[in-house]
Amino acid sequence: MKMYFVKLLMVNFFAVLLPNTVISQHYLIPTRFSQSPTPPRPCYSNPDNWSALPSKDDPADLCPHGYYHDQDGAEADVFFIHPTTYTEKPKTQYAWNHDLRDAKLNNVVDNSATQFQASAFNLAGKVYVPRYRQAHYSVFLTQYPEDKKAALDTAYGDVARAFQYFLDNQNQGRPFIIASHSQGTIHAARLLQDYVLNKPLQSQLVAAYIPGMAVPQDSLPGLPPCAHDSSTGCFLSWSSYEKGYTPPYYELALARAVCVNPISWERNESYIPKSLQKGAVLRPFHLPLPQICDAQVHGGILWVTKPRFRGSWLWTDKNYHMGDINLFYLDIRENAALRVRSFLQQK
Image 1 (cartoon, rainbow, N blue to C red):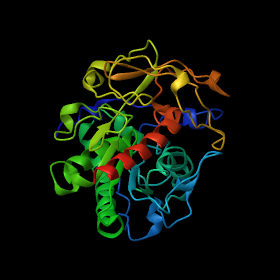
Image 2: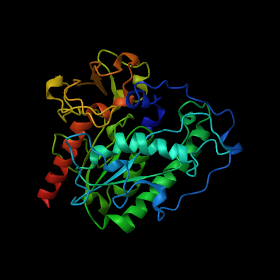
Image 3: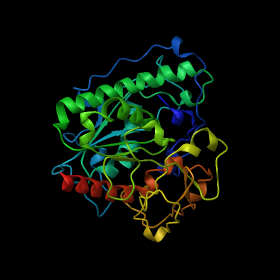
Image 4: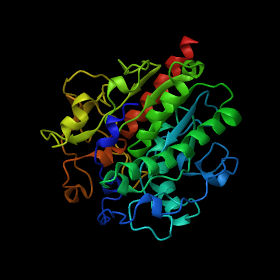
């Protein structure tokens, strides 16, 4: 399997979610994967092993002021795979993968990725967000590829079991969206390959929203990039950077990556002004920020003029990875609902 997108380094997305919080340096685990025990495997019949379920009162149900969710009457489902939140020095013997008994880290997932990212899809469908033994951020820093693979395989095994449980017990043949960010996109791409592409299940796929990692078109054979704002049976990906900046690792994978503009929902390199942007959702969550950034596809990356918002002066990194979803939250929200409607009209 071609996993070009695994090669890219990532940055912590909390800088946008928590603009007034000082982010510590990423910790590099000094021991090898083989020297660290693996935390217990989760059972997905237990609701506690889901950050979000339609049957739970959870952060995926939240909406910015003036917006509402439609999970009760939704005709589609959303399976969202959260990004890396396990970045600090491990507190237990389970170094390389998140121990799901860690209530503090579970709360971080709930109150960051589930609230600020997964909730963007709650108008389009019923939202499911599994907890999984996510790989520590060290997998993107380690010099040992076998340790990276082992930790990511452990994480993906959980995602795959959660998805199978979702199919067997919750989905009931309904249309679905797969959505993700960052590490979640690594697992989403693999999930699409293993469970969806060129299989009967592909007929239920509305679209895959998989930003935050380089996804070359040939890595998902049989699943085309989305051509326009209401295309279905396709995928969307983008990686955001400050306008005019090309990262030094561009040729590793981004040069071959699919990039869709999350304002126009097209792949051409037309400049889309911020006047056409629906809006961002940062902190405080309940106050949406309309028309704060533009977007332009530039090769395999998305260029964004630095947006202005409360605390934006603290945001100095030219890599806008942390804002891939949040900067376009309302655009994604409206577009996902549009694709579901388009899918249902075709049936």
